[in-house]
Amino acid sequence: MEFINGFDKKLRMKYIYNITYHIEEAVFSQWQEWIRGHMSRSLQESHFSGLKLLQIHIQEVGSKAFSLQYEATNKEAISYFQSVLEEHYRKELFLQFGEKVLTFATLLEVTEELKQD
Image (cartoon, rainbow, N blue to C red):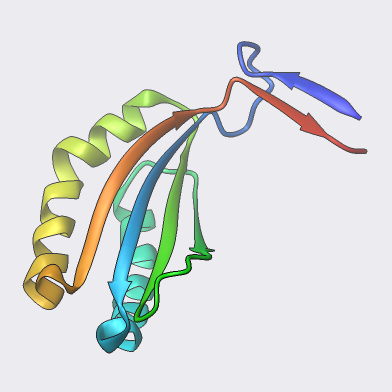
């Protein structure tokens, strides 16, 4: 096992900007189509090094939840996204889905990581 300290420069990804989506079942297929296009476009337009879409397993009937994780090596990539791109993306999402898709964002910093060889 290799222990990687986040305060060293060894980490490939240091920050994760996580946007959680709560989607009503009625618009889920349309949202899937939208998120695929959004992921491709936002990776090209942003300074992020990668993206991951993860399903969150919830007990609530009639809805689904997903986490879109933008990976960055520095805070400048996060700041650029927040100041230049995020508001436009949120408006686009609201115009298409209204309150049938709700979101919230969280900034995470990787401080330590353990990898198995």
